[in-house]
Image 1 (cartoon, helix red, strand yellow):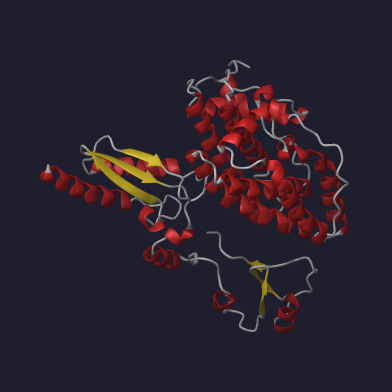
Image 2 (cartoon, chains in turn brown, blue; image 1 turned 45 degrees about the vertical axis):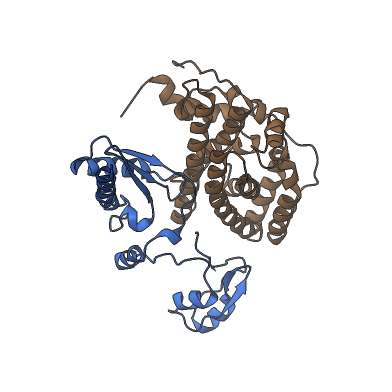
Length: 259
Length: 170
């Protein structure tokens, strides 16, 4: 790669914004991979549009991180010029699309969380974060409704769609725990009211929503057990590096390219 | 002082009219004022600042709309105008003007209705199938396929295929 990675001064607030921005960018990128491949035109457009929602959220959060950091970085530098170990997204969101059922289960697990999370974050004492939350909450609510419909349709559909949806639930379950964890850096922001919610408090409500839909879909949740973690501190699965090599290749290979 | 203020008020009105006439690149029958995307126009020392809000976070038309506003203002003699994006309060379809809704209808797109749809409004919208029975279902409306199948000849659908008339996204 021809362009070196940037360095980032990760104060708690910068780190917080980058984590949420990375979540949105990586999941948005995954959804964009369906463009031209989805099972129906309507769904192709729906996935691309939801990817755009997430890309928009990522841009707002990156721009805010850049303002707070004040070191001359910007949204493009954060997206294109950080290496895999500098990315702070949830492991769940970088997992490959797999089949359509896997994409929908990943979307559902996350949207059920994001809907609650952004609604709570609308009470942030930070005006920018509260505004981003208000916009994101509307979009997450729609993503949840969309993926819930698909959960039921796939789970309670044919034998094959049921099997594929259940496999995805079983495989992705271990990545759901990370959504509810906070570290010291974020804890300080919660205490100051900048982050308006401790995500751990959202777990019961998340589980209620997820259980209801999964039940209606005639699927079963795995017994809660050991949970994966590491994305928030840059320890990723092997999949993120591959995703970034595609996402960043032009910017890194042809520095300053314009068209 | 008073004259300067009056001038600013007049300028603001003129600048607003220019910005308000910019059309949505995706649905060019609608202006950004019809859509409620145009939020504010301010004039300070003869310099115009326009505030717009995205309909959704990733709206790819925002850059183009900004550019169109700047160009339109420049054509009307407002040099060095600035367009900023505001996120709060978040856009809702309720901000679409009545005129905008009418234009949309004439363009062939069903305009969004304000707030949640009542079952009666849905029935009116679904007036093409008057025999359809609509019942409340989790805030949305469920179209009973079994009843529908009795009225109109439809192939038997599996239980899991559900058609929803959702409350519109607002």
